[in-house]
Image (cartoon, rainbow, N blue to C red):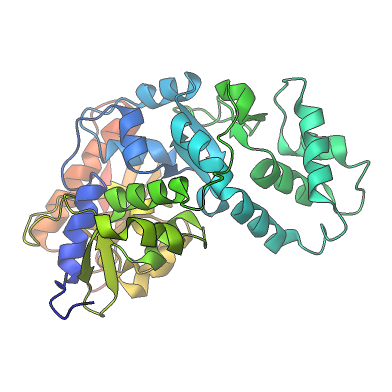
Length: 371
């Protein structure tokens, strides 16, 4: 790489990330378009995507997301990193086969001993036979239906392998609907969406992998190949990156890592003001990178994997937040200026109003650690 490769400092990367993640300015986008732009939203906690979209979209109505789920335009399914994601129907159909091997490997990584003597192709066939009647089932119900043939592993191992890896499944509403608590029930994607997932590409050029590279950079770039791998969980994308490399522009970060990006994607001036934003648990704006230093300090990195909800101040994780009895409580991770505390409280009141469906001033900003 040429010594003239431009260097992007942490603040420049932060502002690019905020712009791509729709966190610099709330966007005027339909819900389905926003989810597609983001390449899906991590959603194992069913209500969290509502806050993620509220922070990203102007005049977001939570019923719009519920309607997209019941209308089968958006789907809850195991995909990137074997975690439950909210993705567009078009994306899950196009991407699911590309994730098959990774999903199997990750479930086996947890249950390898228990599944050692199980022929996975036979298990998949047995699971499909059970689901052929078109009746939604919980993971436990499906596992118990096949357990007679494999009594050794136990229902948890059989069930997770079936619903998270072997059979492309949708988690059905009412789970994931606004203010709805519901157990997880599954139906094969082909039944829920009315068509089979796209088969694995027979072409060595891997068009699906190339599409994933482009889509990732559109929502997360500039980024390194290691960041892409962490986002999707796929190890086999170097060839796809190489195939699209001539389309891309290259940068370096302050540590010398090569970063790739789409040439016309937004890279705002590092001095661009960044508003306070409240992020839900497990938001991909934080989790979607190997090097998360562009948005969260190393000292607080653990928060991103423990399910803490975080507050961005000047574009960086500066506090956590929680809700109890309709009160939003913000706990700073560092000293906040008077102006920052005012901005956090203002955005917190807006969030409290959104969550309670009425005007609310029930926000508490706790003392900063240094106070």
